[in-house]
Image (cartoon, rainbow, N blue to C red; front, top):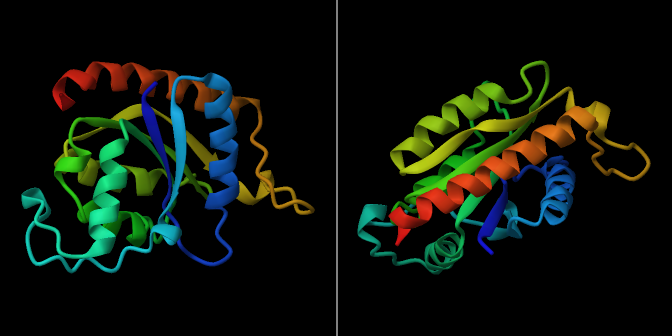
Length: 188
């Protein structure tokens, strides 16, 4: 079964990426198309990119980069759970993407974005240009969560998506599985 990296792109205190990622993880488990690993960029703890060589050369000098390279290399596809910061991509996600190059190539990615009225879609639009440069194939199907606080249970802190969000997640995961199989040839 292919490996899916479910990436929590926010590292701020009080972030809601964790409960949203847990919700997505539960859907992934019920879909059964992937072996899913939650990758929390806060826990990964990458420093601001400071490798002396360009990532395409894979001449890493720092232990954090070496560990990140190993983790990303094991994944066949990604879902980025991302907020929108000032109409743009989370700096932690940009940094994580910029640390590597070859390890990302020919892998598909989906997005679960959250925010206010725009539901994080401006962040996704910006992120896709970065993904394309890294030869990551962003799929069209996505989950966009507007006014995300409305889905957070105040008592438990858990995220509870409604039926349209759950359907969107299922469609995205099925399409991501198709792209993962199609791109396997290029990753070989």
